[in-house]
Image (tube, rainbow, N blue to C red):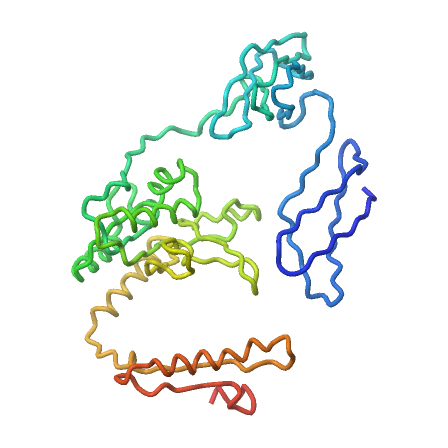
Length: 372
């Protein structure tokens, strides 16, 4: 709306800025955010915008109002077309309470009068007939994941729509893979991700629920603790569908973590990093990013065929070490560590393995030679 202000900060970080005394207009207002990067290398990503302003107590599009808690005052909200009004204290999403001793007056438009609760500051007022109705009600049988009497070495996590048919029978890929792992002597636990949500996040879809479940199983299931985790099902970088693509193949969550060099990226290893104050994974984790049961079947068939074939696997004794070169300039001095890391690794190779083959870019006149 014409008010300009500049902010600056250094490095990759979260930054919060505030503007005071900005004129607001009824209807549309304009917020423009511009990254003033001298070399074009800087970028910013907007997380959220919040506007606080005074308003009349007249019902609007969302019927949500904020007041100072325990002010001792009573508030009156105008503009309702129905007299069957009910108010809720929604300050705490997990402890919503109906407003007692409210009073409805007027004659189209109607008014709703009440006194804020002792600790609440956010309220929803609406006509009882406009309340949302559940799409459906379904019985859920608790899996009781907290009490696994036999433990597991191998935890397979998938979604019920991917692992089981509509009649409840497991799909072939699931049966085949479980049987294959059992024949290898592993204790196998098959878990539906919806059961994890139910028991570890109150039914809310969250990557934290998956991590909490694995941490619990690692620490509390009968020993020895689980060693392997397989996630079967694709994921998405947009779980709340901000892009409006409605990806119905995102069966399992992933975690988007912030990295120093590349910014936000997904990481399944985060799910199994919980014991001790370090960044080392505590269980081996992998994912089959299947979008449907047919894809899962193809992947599992290949795994079983490979592991069942008579194969001396002599290639596992070969090692190729590849390293980029250091770009010119002091800003890239850290890249010299690429070769150093490989040399340290080469010194640790067991004698039973073949001599490592090294492909360092510095050893070639041009990168094109590496293709020969």
